[in-house]
Amino acid sequence: MAFCISDEILAPYRGKEIGKNLFFRRLDKELTNSTPQSLGQECEVRDWPTVEEKPRRFYYFDKAYSVARRLKRFKHVNHAVNHCIDWLADILIRDKLVRTGCEFLSPYSLIITTRLHAMILSVLLYKKVEYIDNSTGKLSAFAETWLQELDSVKKFQND
Image (cartoon, rainbow, N blue to C red; front, side, top):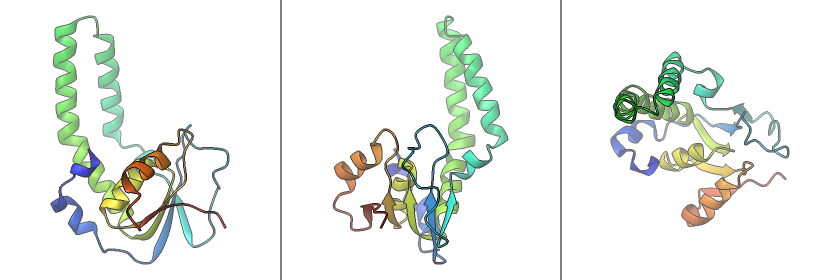
């Protein structure tokens, strides 16, 4: 679905590089033990801003989904509640997350990432991307399947 983000949303964030590099290092259970801690002083090490500091609205949506799961046995109520939560999330969260991601990645010239969505969004922003597989191997699988013809995407080689 990320490839369906409109060009109107992406265009303002393209070409905003200020010569910095980003090591987009995930902080969760999909991080492998072989993933480096840092890549030298020329790379800032970060994870998604929303992982580093979770917005309050995420907390409320987590609570709402928790209530919806408890209502599962009441099919009609559960369906209506889930529909409302999804509708609100679409309005209040999705666009904010896309813009936050674009703002976050736009100043960097090179993105070295352990996150698939960071790789995809970087491609959409015309960034150079190097990827380091997470524990599932999904970055290399995705890159080999869909991005192999892009010169701007390659597997990270720690020289």
